[in-house]
Image (cartoon, rainbow, N blue to C red; front, side):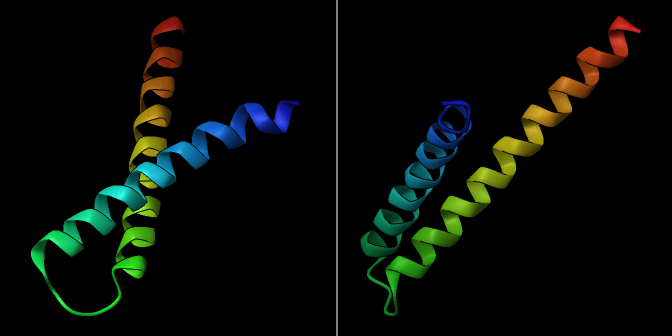
Length: 65
């Protein structure tokens, strides 16, 4: 059960990034594989969200002393 608590939000963020990247690539009409761009966008969004959460967590921890 504990794994699902972490895995589900991670998967949602990656899938959201995938959908955004894939749709943007298709909308521009560029050639190539939009699936690769979708996965890269999903992983990039996951990295950004993780970085923001860690930064927020560290700032709160510093304030508490």
